[in-house]
Amino acid sequence: MQSQNPPPPNCSPSDRAALLHFKSHILVDTTTILSSWVGTDCCGAWEGIECDPRSGRVIGIQLLSHQNGDSSQYMKGTLSPQLGSLQFLQVLVISGLKEIRGTIPQSLSNLKKLTQLYLEDNKLEGTIPSLGNLPFLRALSFSNNRLVGQVPLSLGYSLSLQQINLGKNFLTGPIPPTLKTLRGLQYLDLNNNLLSGSIPSFVGEFKNLTYVDLSHNQFSGTIPVTLSSLTNLLDLNLEHNQLKGELPVFLGNLRLLSSLSLAHNLLTGPIPQSIAKMQGLWYLNLSRNGFTDPLPTDLAKGLPSLLSVDLSYNNLRLGSIPNWVTMRKLTNVHLAGCGIRGTLPRFTSPNSLNTLDLSSNFLTGDTGLFFKNMTGLQRAKLSNNMLSSDVSSIALPNDLSALDLSSNRMYGSITLFLESHYGSSLEMLTLSNNQITGALPKFGSGSGGSRSRLKWLDLSRNRIVGGLPDSISELMGLVRLDVSRNVLKGSIPPSLGQLERLMWLDLSYNGFSGGIPQSLLGLKSLRHVSFRVNDLCGAIPQGKPFNIFPPVAYAHNKCLCGRPLLPC
Image (tube, rainbow, N blue to C red; front, top):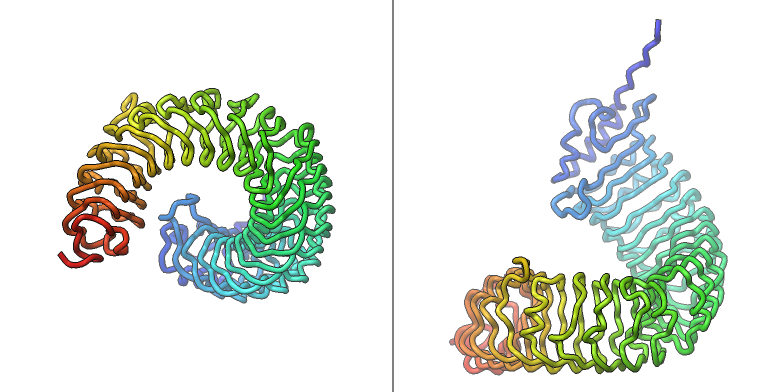
């Protein structure tokens, strides 16, 4: 007779009790995961639970939000210390549940068989407990919580660790010296904390490292020479720290490096020639440091994989955009504040560009047809130059979502410009501080009945005349509206109160008359407002959100009254 396999054992009563204790600490569960935790067999249909098929002991807990980024999917509660009694547990994942609060139980250090511990994207508080007695732990992530204190010394005693992610917390102090023992480390992410001190030289001893992110901290000192040994490194992010000194020549040894960001530091001196040796580098961000001329000549032949470059706001005086930038198929070019002069450049492959930032330079000439062949362009920033064009003649790519031409010498009719691009992909439009004239058009459906996608409209410091049209309410997605310092007149249209998403409204330094419409009390998202220096009169609307704005927001008008000004 054919033997039948024995049925899998039911789960251990002690394990079931520990899981139910965890469930009792969860007060709200909109994921509905825990609704399946009924009956006596936690190895059966209990979602997120895995058992050993032979012993029936719980070896895995994986509780994740079903829909990433969906704010309605969460668990609210704390972590039960009874989790530490699941002595056969190998994998513990409680991630993306958003409202798990309280501290990380010290009892988790009892889970001797644990290999993976992920408690990401919650609201866990307090310090990280000592977890040094977990000999098989390979991956640890507590990222995106509210943890404080120092990185525990005990972390260096879990000798099997290959991945550490403590990013996006409030951790302080240095990287502990005990981490030196983690010779198998492949992934180190401590970004967005308050860590300080120097980057320890022993990081260069982690020969298997492929990913290092120490960005957005307070690290100081120089970049350790020992990092030259990290020949397997693919990503290095040290941006937003206080690192100083020159860029090490050894960076050229990191031949496999694909992404390098050293932005927002205190680095100085010339960029070394060796950087051109990075055959796989596609992302290079050296912005906001003190790098000086000249740029490496080898860049003309090197960096064959480069797609994105940012050299903005250093002490570079390029004069013109280098050929190695214009001759490549780059997707992102950021050369703001690089001392570039002359007319706008011609790109050999303009259709590859996705983002272009040439702001804060000394560019002159016409922009009319500059964007014509940039069919893939989505974001363009040419502000703070000396460009001069009739805005109504500027041809924009169909997919352009953000355009900033502020602080130039633009002129012409805003009416024609807005009418011709209404219903386009534009979400952010900044034309402030130019010489633009004309009146705001009647907003309505664009070609094919399409609605405007504008979220940000800044036309301040121009010479725009007329009034604010009633049809402003058609810009339903508007978050920011700034038409200050123009020559606008007439009354403020009550329809403005229909822009429910509006957070910033600036109508100051115009000639608006009449009163502030009561309908503006409907702007519940408003965080900034200014009506100052107009001819407004009458009672200021009372109640939210107008009760949070200071007197200066209403100053220098004809006869406004009511809080925060004098009573009517």
